[in-house]
Image 1 (cartoon, helix red, strand yellow):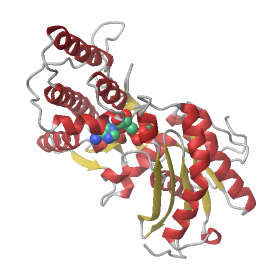
Image 2: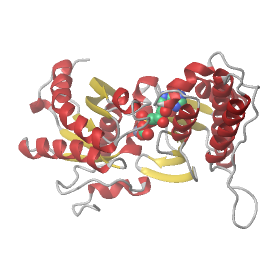
Image 3: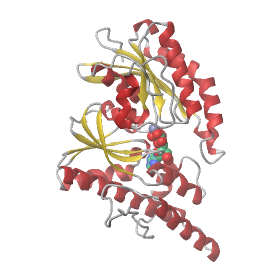
Image 4: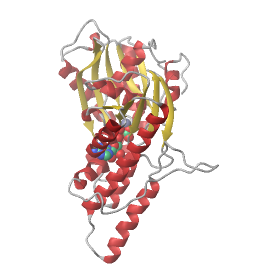
Amino acid sequence: MKYNPNCKTVLALETSCDESAAAVISKKDGKFVVIASSIASQIEEHANWGGVVPEIASRRHLEKLPFLIQETFEKSGIKLSQIDAIAATVTPGLAGALMVGSITGRTLAALHKLPFMGIHHLEGHLASIHLGEESPKPPYLVLLVSGGHSEIIKVEKEGLYIRLGRSHDDAAGEAFDKVARLLGLRYPGGPAIEEKAKTGDIYRFKFPKGRVSKPDGGFYPYDFSFSGLKTAVMRQVKSFENSSEKLPIEDLAASFEQVVAEVLVERSLKCALDTNIKSLVLVGGVASNTRLRKLLKEKARKHFIDIYLTPTTFCTDNAAMIGAAALIRLELGMSSSSLNLGVSPRWPLEQANLLYNPTPPF
Ligand code: KG4
Ligand code: ZN
């Protein structure tokens, strides 16, 4: 994609977990244009340990990010002098990993006298929906399902969020990762389970749809709990081991994947119906799951709810979505973050606007 001098263009960096990523993105005629996007995944290395090792993650980001930025500029055909702002994820995530992208971004911004935009990672996932063919118009609901989060968020208007549902224990992606390990599959569990589930029987095992009780009776209608489901899979696996019968990995994977997809779809659609919001958006790493994408579309059609799916290339962590969030913030009039803005492992999405305060929140 060619660089257009009449629109804002940002360089975006993402290093919150196990993907080092850089992108050059701009907005033209109301559409986001990803000029170049590069990702250096560390997944293979972490897979040897069964999950992300924070120390390894930080070191690899340090080693890879400079070359990734260089490669992204080469692919984009534009120069740093044509960039209007530099964005980097600053929260939530692994502190050491976040620090690499943040320091790199702030250094480049200071050296080249450019605004620095500190981005909330979840706001990046939310913005990923605008990288597809069709963008939803607020108000809309978002089902955000990743390795660290499972949330239903109402976007009142761009930059204004209300969380309506959440997980009380594991995130959906975390459940995929943990169940994959139980089944002897490699990290990350989502793609590994999806592959095995293709030839499995979704009806063979009846796993529970975890509910979260309210203290005064009843259940939180839009909340999730995946730890009981994980325990149920573990019990099944143990009983097969004790009987020395061969583990039916495909059927276990398919029955597990189906129940996760059903729970996510049922609760998010209930939320859409109860709040009378007609647009529902699916984002985050787990959003690349084909069964979930299909089920959501199928069920929503019956209720006349419009479904927007993030393109699969932008579901898992990437820098284009961080750049899209930065462009939205620039449009909202937040011209920069303080160069003193640090990083934080946690920060509420609802308070992402404080990342642009002259006195930074962390
Ligand atoms: O959004 P993401 O890249 O990182 C976080 O912000 O957490 O999400 C990673 C998560 C992992 O837990 C991974 O197992 C899951 O997304 N995932 C999937 C699929 N691809 C990735 N889960 C289910 N099906 C998939 N195809
Ligand atoms: Zn993510």
